[in-house]
Amino acid sequence: MAEIATETAEVNASLKKCWNVVMDIEKYPEWIADIKEVRILSTDDEGRPDEVSFRAAAFGRSTNYTLKYDYSGVPNTLKWVQLNGDHTNKLDGSYTFEESGSKTTITYELEAELKIPIPGFIKRRAETLIINSALRDLKARAESN
Image (tube, rainbow, N blue to C red):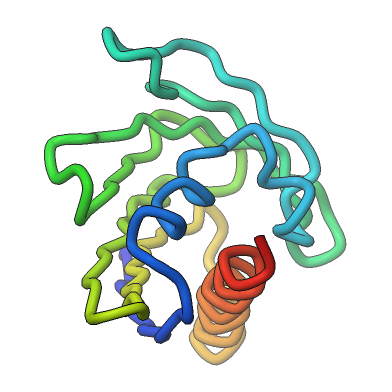
């Protein structure tokens, strides 16, 4: 069964700057500790990543998955769905951006379903680590550039 986790962070950067960091998917391994490799498999008509393959660290192992991006909410929302994964059935999510003055509130939502059942408390801990890391690393990257 898939579980949804959501977290929000306030970033001292414009929506445009935050969006640009998120859209530079090929550079994720530079600022997201658990992302080890990114390969853009296809782009849309505007040259944006459409299907992207990732290799990430997870529980001391390596996991591979492919995401398909949805740009219908640009520039306030970036959504994705998992096309395939070796350890997950579902890894769907979104970033939602709301600008207020010189700051941007970012909400990260992730719906995950593992292929192998694990105890709930371990799954919740992993989801919390993924989401907190994603937002913390995005905040640090956007505020430093």
